Image (tube, rainbow, N blue to C red):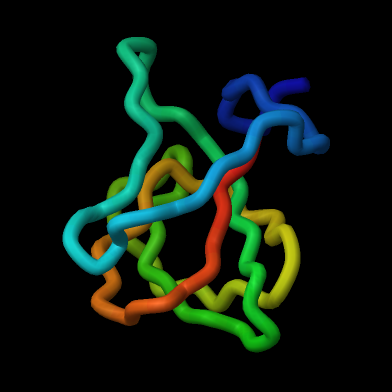
Length: 91
């Protein structure tokens, strides 16, 4: 399936892992094929705010992520000094 921007994506999460080191660096998935879009799963009991770069965006946008998988397709999460966030990425 393709997004309106022509980027291949899937409505199902088949690969996921922990988002780590947000206290010291931005998070993105390295690829030599260009930006990789991913979803964010908030595994806490409360919503969290993150500054994220949309997959086809050009600036970070403050976004509220509810518990569970969120539907925003992003390519990067900005450094966040909030320790202890329990987040996963998936695509």
